[in-house]
Length: 255
Ligand code: GDP
Ligand code: MN
Ligand code: MN
Image (cartoon, rainbow, N blue to C red; front, side, top):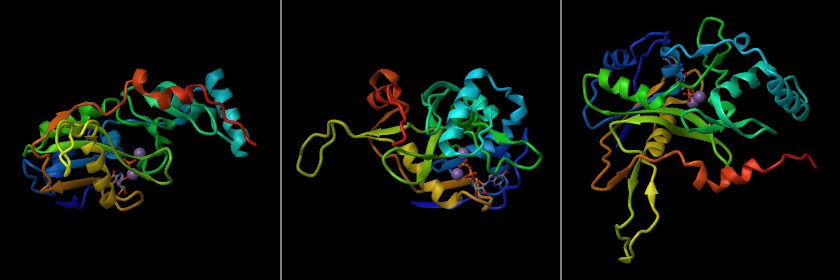
């Protein structure tokens, strides 16, 4: 497969038609996968915000004070308020805010970015409200019929470093289900469900970069889902998520 970034995209403005901006700069094919950084989806959907939009509640002040003490630097309680308002659950309160967003993604600070926010003087860029719908809308508006994935750069537990993940997708199942297929020894696979949208997002992130590259859209070409069952599940349900349950009862302590 090939992965290449769409060149020459402008600074994205509220109301911009991302599909048209992409179509103007590249000839997509029906079997492509188009990965769009959530940053530009948020800009197009006008998800920029100001800290002053989030007057801090007592809870936000309490969270920020704890984080400030741990980090030994100022923490704006209005930022904590923004995180609270974007989240359905605070899973970890310290030494950072790990939360579940309203659409199911678990990430630090509810994925709110303070970099590449765009011009104007907005302080924050919130994640798209409904990334599946964003992906479906971009897909509908493209001339060709590729799959579309809305991505974000996200950290992960157990390993240093960040990588691209899928927040929303359309025209492709979330996962490739290998269960029932056989390995080289003839053993039936019992658990492997491969989260292809995350893998594609990670590949796309390799060419989009994190800084001032100006490359928010990547195209994956000549990759095939193949003859497998698909699954739509990516975000774990709380009931079956034992790590999340364990973290709920965990308390940060500095030794
Ligand atoms: P995130 O991973 O979705 O949070 O987005 P990043 O901030 O990591 O940006 C991903 C890529 O998009 C980088 O190459 C940025 O320079 C680029 N980028 C961000 N905003 C814009 C924009 O409005 N226009 C263009 N052309 N590139 C942008
Ligand atoms: Mn981001
Ligand atoms: Mn990024």
